[in-house]
Length: 230
Image (cartoon, rainbow, N blue to C red):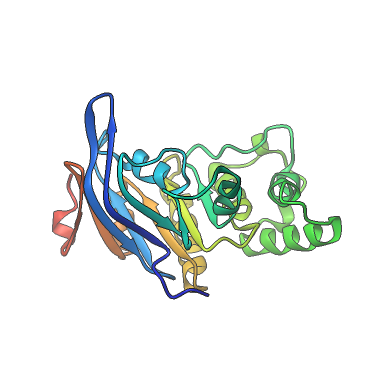
């Protein structure tokens, strides 16, 4: 495995409708690192994440993710980039007409895996996130915390190098939030890099990791939790 940073932004500028969202920004995330990105609404966090899975391109600068140069790669390589990323959203985005097993299996089916491998991998993932007993349940029958565990299992299906977690506890109660954060900690302890966008400063304080604040188009690394308020 490469020893290069898993995410590297060099002098990146993003403009939208005449407004500068990210301004000559520099950032790195090392292999196996867990980091938080905080910032007020409209500060550019969504644009930052979209750069990483190549939903948008920078106006200037270079973006490298999992050894892919996003600013130079051809369109046919984008699916391979996205397989190296596990993306967890706040609003779950599960397929409502498929049960837990099939939601996770879908991520493996679209990448062309065989039926036997898919079954083994899905059962392994459901065991990892503590949902083996819920494999036939439909999304509407799950609690918010259980739904997010399915999302995490699906995100891990193709063994990505990096997890991008966009407000993964935003719709959860404190008990479910703790269970999800404990799970993310376990995943990180196994060696996966995690970049988590969050507004939940209690989470940042109880699960301390490197924390960056996005403000005025720049990333500022916080040296004290006293600086958390945005």
